[in-house]
Structures are given as C-alpha cells and as structure tokens.
Image 1 (cartoon, rainbow, N blue to C red):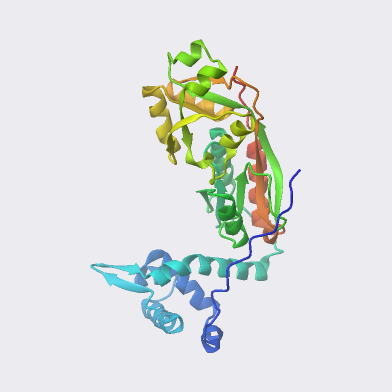
Image 2: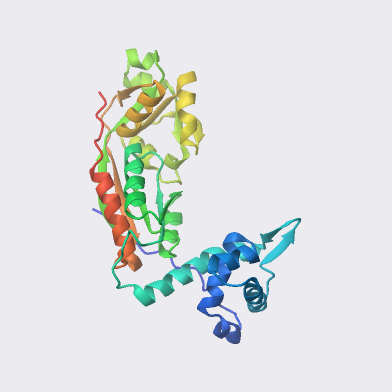
Length: 328
C-alpha cells in the first residue's frame, strides 16, 4: 500500500522581487512571442512561427528585453543564441502558458485528432520495449500533430518536483513511497531475469554462488539514488552483486554482454527481447526475488485535464497489452 509523504515544496516564485509595473505589462501576446523566440532563437523564424511580420516580433523582443532586464538573444557569429537567463526562462514560460490554457479551456473536451500537444513522460529504461512501441503507435495514430517526449526519471526528489512544477505530465516508477500530492495506479508486475552471452558458464551452472561471484553490469537508472528499482529488489532478497560496470546508456549493454562475461539483471520481458535481438541468452535469477512492479504517477493538478487523462488512458492500454515473458 502506498504511504503518503509530505510533498516537496514548490520553488520560490520566479516573479519575487519583480517590478509590479513590469508584471502588469506582461501579456499573453508577449509570452507567446517569448516562447517562439526561445524555441527558434531567431526573430524572423519566430515571426513566421506566429504569423506576424518581423518588425512586430522585433518590437516584442525589445519590450521583453526591457521587462526582463536581459538581452535574452545575443549574436554569436552568424546566429543568435540564448543568454543563461533566457535558458532559465524556457520551462517557466511553458508552464505559465500551459496554466493559461487550463484557465480558458480546462473543462473542454480533448480531441486527439485535432490537438497539438507535447506529452512528457518520465520513466525507467528497463520497461518492456513493446510498451514504448505500442504507446508511440497509439499516440501518433490518434493524435498525429502531438509529440511524445520520453525523459529519464532521475531520483525520487527529481521526478516528484518535475510533476509538481508541471515539467512532465506523468511518470512511471517502481517506488511505492509516493507523496500525498501525487496520484498513482498500478501498471504492471513482472519477474526478474538475467542476460548473458552464448556459452556463458552460468548457463551450465546457474547456481546462486556462481551468480553472486560473477561480474555484473547495472543501468544507472537502477542504481542507488536514481530509482533503486532492480538493485533494491536484489538487496531485499539479500543479494549483493559484484557491479563492475554502471552505465546510463542501455543501448551499450547488449554489446558488453556479447563480448564479455558480464551479467545483466532486469525485467523478464526486456531480457527476452534483448536476448532475441542480440543473440544472447537468459536464465532466471537463481533464488526467489520479488517481482518488479511499476506505477503510473501524476500530479493532482492534472487530474481533470482532459489531455492528461487521455495520455494516462493510452499508457494504461499499452501496459495492459504487454505479454510478460517467463524465463526459466
């Protein structure tokens, strides 16, 4: 059962200390221009993006520079680049404009076929590969003008804060210590499995002693302080592996396994898919280990947002369609 915890306090308002008259002059039109300028880093391209003439965008840039007290865009050779202040403003502007949309049409129906939304999902990289491909197909076919941005989940404090600040729409985590300001539903549960190269000695004698004596590779998404998803389950069973390689790049692991005696322990569905694609071999963890469970988590602020609800529905359908692999 999930234990409520105190929420991480939101950051101090970015407008603290701002001049009241400057805040009053900041309107939706200027914010839209600011987002376009920060995105394309060009006055002419930003003007074309919003369908206005270049002189109008230049006037907006001048007003924004005055209001923020920063140049925002500066020339570097033949192109314009963002100042550090401008870089810091990018997520702030996105969040403010998103909140404005909620004020205007938060209760309106969401039409996926007509929508143009950037859905942001934070998750682990060891989930079954079939889940991601199905989710991508569902979103691109039903909402072709929308995009799906898949981010690394980071540690607990990081993804919780990103949810609180509206930087992501949802997260998939194996953690059960979910703060009370978040909502969560169970997505899937699957057993763990091990992956090794063909001819590995563990395939002949997959004993617990040999498993613990072997050298292991671990994804940093599973490392202590960054989710502890798989490593924590092994530690819970009293297993201390000899981790000789840690990497945040899951794509490097198959070649490491194929050319060394390393062992990789992960969810059984990903293990089976990886083994089939890269001619590797799988076997079950040689001692009882609690299976890994994943939860879909979102912030209370998006509970009624129709687009966010639709995204969660697609994630749920994709998860329910996964055929979990059993490794013996």
